[in-house]
Length: 122
Image (cartoon, rainbow, N blue to C red; front, side):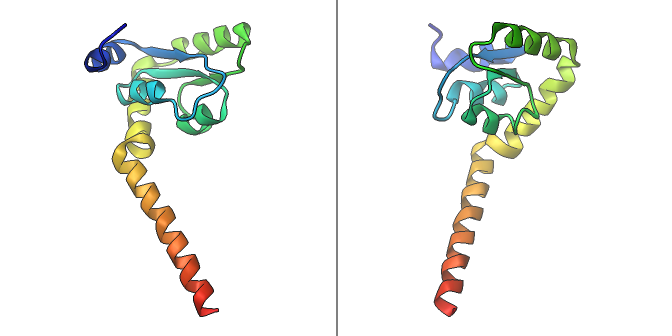
């Protein structure tokens, strides 16, 4: 077990973060790893597709398929890891950070309010 306060040091020291879940509601561990620039290699489940921008960062592999996991790891590790880590951090800031989540929530809320306004005027 690693104390939560120590996780940033662990994630920042890693080049790659591997998680083979069958189901995740949100994937907090993967989000935390991305925040530290660890390149995610995750199972291809809905929440991880969303976290990686459909696989735009890191790699996704079919749950239970060890050969596909091995292939994903080789692909990621043969790539420009320092550059990929930078792209993961950029993706985190643009899509997964609290400010990004807040901007998206506000945008959704504004669209709902505008839709209701239009319904009242119709």
